[in-house]
Length: 394
Image 1 (cartoon, rainbow, N blue to C red):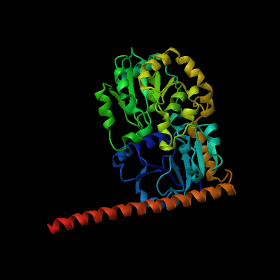
Image 2 (cartoon, rainbow, N blue to C red):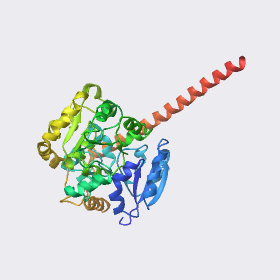
Image 3 (tube, rainbow, N blue to C red):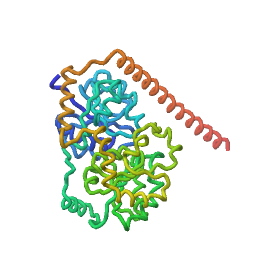
Image 4 (cartoon, rainbow, N blue to C red):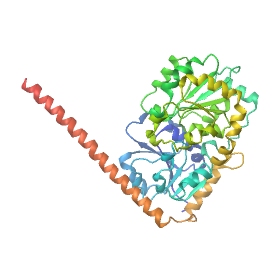
């Protein structure tokens, strides 16, 4: 199987950015863009790649079985349970919201490529799982000199005489953008404020950019922006429950977390108080729960920035391999080759049972969703017909 047909399945530009180093390592791979019906504008990012491109509607995912031998994926997608011939390789992209990131869908993967020992252990009961590092930080040394950082700031049109704050919130109701935007706007004169939005907040609209501009914030980055460059020029990272928290820890940046009204967040995006971004926040950095405490917390973080980075050191080592010591892409390729050669441990009986159960549950869920959509269409049609009849009677 050394001539295995390799594919990457994506449905947004952030995933392409995340996979970019691996795609370079497999130049003959096919990039499969999953048409979900609401992501047409994400296709533009495909123009940056010379690989073969396939666009497949979510209802046609099953055709991958006959076309692709190995499929890299970032997160579960519609009809994934139909891929019973293609070997699936999940590539970790985040650490937050652990109930999702280490959920039962990992059992569908024939190989889980994880950031470090912590994550590999969390999913090893589902299927073979190995630490290969965070692929998007492959070969990133994070060792720019002060002069180089100054030039990088100038390139991004930042004021080199100000401290730079990078704000990376999560998306939806769990995110803090609406809560903190007023306070962030008030800090523009004192600091460079960069906002890198979560890619899921851009799925329907880029309205957040206009809102930020209305508050005087002009350094605005899409979800697929090169995070390495942004972390390089930043002196502090602000977040909430986003996986970006741990990117900041990897980059050895002090972190400030906003955890306002925490009880109302439980259950959103499968978040709970046992998730690492909350459970170990005392190691991550400083946190505040009242939005009016933002400026004071930032000031305290700058006073103690070295201490904050140092207190997160052990957590960093626990969560990540370091690109200064390991070549992440080569490690990933090694385990993929082991999978191809059938040298990885075979699934245990228990793992097979879990996988088959998850496949059946997803299949039933899809059937229910189709029936629900059909029912809505019928109700809409009947309502329309009823109104039409009333109009004709008049």
